[in-house]
Length: 263
Length: 268
Image (tube, rainbow over all chains, first blue to last red; front, side, top):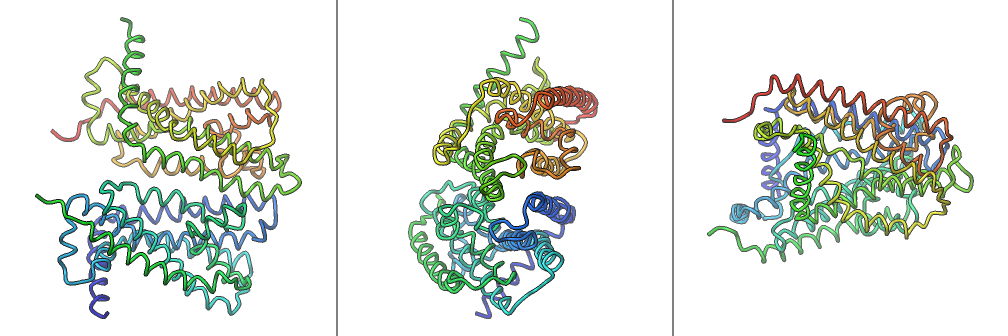
């Protein structure tokens, strides 16, 4: 375990060093996150709350908190998950995946920690600022004991999405051409930037159980704004554990299909 | 053959070639279709909830639904692809062979734009029709509005193309004009009619949105279709649409002329 952790840290360090040589792009990400995305998020929420005080039970500050938490998740996934998972698709495509299998480390671990995109921390910090602004400046910061559940729920949500992304990536072993996986994902993921309660019940169901974006934005935020815990909150860690286990089984199944691409 | 006929012929053949090329990427087109339909769905849900049993600034729930259904189609036809095409031609030095041909390379971007819209429509239209059938908005079509809608979409698509081309042509001076486009796209998202119909924007922002070009690339044709504008607003809208196109064309010409003078191909 300790060995794995130090491997992951080394990968992160090397990737960050590589990325820091492109300082312009690094700075550009921060300008984009804080200058454009954050501004537009605030404008969009303000436009809605000019016309109403509450949208299906959510106030302006609470809504901003959801958007903020959504950006934190997006930022974390773009830092930790997307870069490595895209590399798997590329490597399988080019027959370079052999090198992952040859290393004396569990393949799924190695394949999902190889890359790290520190520049996307811009979106994590921006999301955090939006959430804090929403909760403290607009809601007066009435935080209850439920905040203790937040880290657990955010971690569960991230684990669920890690499993989902692994499962999507594993498909590469059957269909070698699997471009745009990140693109497909983003199309659906964007629907989670507002509370899922605003949707009609069948879309809400879809976004909770089929493409569970509710678990990374709406459900963790509910603990921050002092909503009563729902049964979904209790279920989140269980779903996360099952999802990660299922994804790792699916990964092993996929590996058996892999037959290299060289010669 | 006259120069105009040659340009037209060239654009048509390039469009055909581009369409057959793009139709190979059916999955990409499907994803594009899904995105075009899902993004507006979010704001449809928002305004549906705000309107509730009454209305929000005159928009009842049925109006909200029809607004965003029309939005899905209009956003497709006014989608500016010229930006990326021109920026890439210039940045990668691929502009050079086009300069040798007896046709302004802007038309290469026009044909690429038409091809992208036509081929993506193959996937978009079924999804779009399905959305209409699922949501079944209550709406009375006014034939006069439908008749005015067609030219307003064509003008919006032209304006959007010209704006994208102007942004793309900045690649003559900046290596990666991506951030400019990102700003344009985001502002258009906010005040052009996606986050909310322009009529729902608060006072000062609404006044600004009416004057700025963004609404005329997207929201205006939808408002024409649903008939939320009186005749003075309609006249003003078409006039501003024409004005911004003329302005954009002049700017595009100026950018092209001064850009091409200092263009140096990248590579050999």
